[in-house]
View (tube, rainbow, N blue to C red):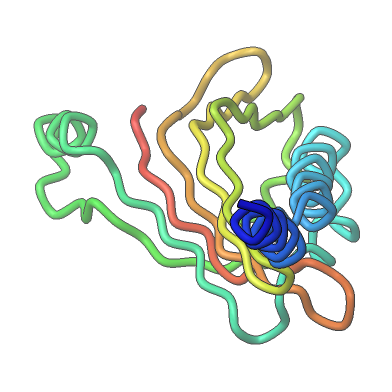
Length: 158
């Protein structure tokens, strides 16, 4: 019986020692989310640009079917339901007049110590009016101690 208890205790200690929850890294990624939101709200392009990996970034938006059909019904039959950009194009919107804000809800962060992903529902607001909303996915890497966004993929409902 002592042997069974001893083995059981060793198993608990071993599993606890090997289990990693990466809470510190999750908090760091959450900080990136907050910085992203604040840089939009404050129109801070310098802080915004620091959030992304250099030279390896992709920004892809896909218009949801209902919204795409509405645009086509309005006479723009050749309108693609997707677009590619990078963060340098998006950040130029920060200079637009008016108050801008992106609101994140239902945030899910999955990570280890050097890679991560973030999934959430978003709403983009301009001058107090919601302009679009949908799902958004980010991939992140920790480069030289700092989390950077590698790509952004999101759906768009207008």
